[in-house]
Length: 122
Image (cartoon, rainbow, N blue to C red; front, top):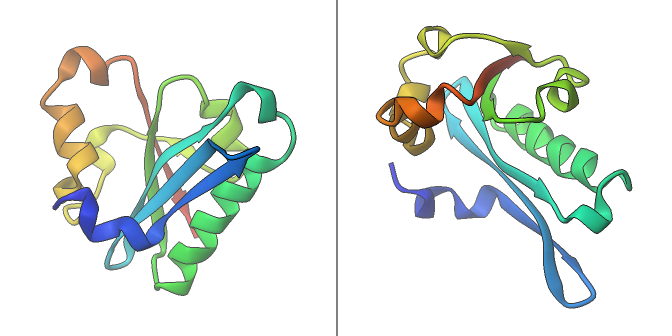
């Protein structure tokens, strides 16, 4: 699946006329992938990352998702505050394994070993 299929569920933060953050969610039936949560350094700690994550999780719930997966390199403690727990890629359900992110990362073990896969049950 291509990211273009999910553009309606990607959000961008603007600050003083420039992109300052983004996040997206991809829905795969009762499962979803939270993608690309990023906030510019000057906005970290202001609640904007929280707003992006909550927007994505609300969207997932509104679209009947019951589990949300993600990969993170350094932000596992941030996502744990929402109830995300570390899992293995083997724990990702079949529908989510079709996502571009899952496929891309599992094909690049040198990058995957730097990531923490996580899951949240909604």
